[in-house]
Amino acid sequence: MTALATEPFAVPALRPAGFWVRAVASLIDWLFLAAVMGLVRALVAYWVELSDGSPAVASAVTTAFSLYFWAAYYVVLHGATGQTLGKMAVGARVVSLDGGEISYGIAFVRWVGYLLSTLTLLLGYLMAGIRADKRALHDLVAGTRVVRIRP
Image: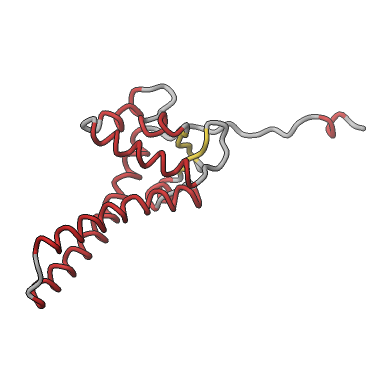
């Protein structure tokens, strides 16, 4: 057996995605979410106008849809590919601490971490800008990290 056959393959180190890369990805995601949720709100408002429906019911329906869609967007995309539309655009991916794919369960825990990051007046998100490993509160809660997948 040659020396080449016994040496392990070199695996390139995963670089953390920096704060600004993550911020741009988040902006793209929020613009997409706002567009979809705004469209749904407009359609429901139009329906209420046409049918003399209850504005309170319409508000409850659109609020419930918005929360569900927000959760589904992040959980499904992170669980399936590790990437949202924003992360795809900037070349970043959510991975486990060892660099592997994350499950839908971990993606859900990470989304709950988003709620915590938001409830801390966004300080949970800003942690990615001051920590050396660039992990935000939701990464710490879920045991994940965001890495660059292209230069």
